[in-house]
Image 1 (cartoon, helix red, strand yellow):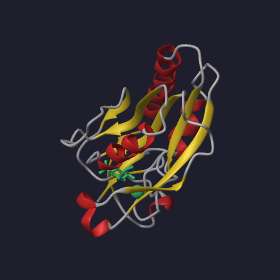
Image 2: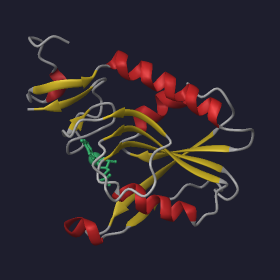
Image 3: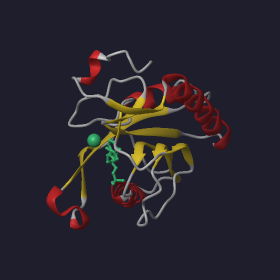
Image 4: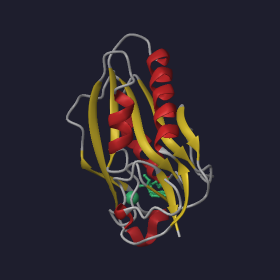
Length: 183
Ligand code: IMP
Ligand code: MG
């Protein structure tokens, strides 16, 4: 995209910059798929996408994983958004697939404060998976509280509010094929 093109998907908002274009994302997602394919021994691997933000990333990623996998999703909701730090995570949709004894790879769009991941990892650990790891497309490295680093990471992200490729602002802009910050 050049700066003179108006993207009708942007609802009249102006882009500050494109942080990752579609080609850059595609190349890195393919590499991540290869890394995941190589990392796991034989045995059940369940790829768990955290909705909604991971829906595009996950669908591209799984097509680059060249081993048997199962795919399911999680929908998490935090209680008391006003007091985020004291809130906890509740599963709005709980995967129907058995987690016990499985290798589980949790796929997340972006790690910001790390609170979501901390709570989800606690919750999922209680289900006694054989292993539990994180694959995050973007990592802002702001998460002083993060207890478990993603084993697989797409990009070290800038400290900007990003939209596109699944990431939203008030449910808009998830369908952008690139990742950008808005003015
Ligand atoms: P955390 O619990 O603070 O790490 O927040 C993680 C969640 O917040 C992500 O799964 C996103 O849904 C959302 N989020 C964090 N940063 C951004 C951003 O830059 N753009 C869009 N959503 C974000
Ligand atoms: Mg969001």
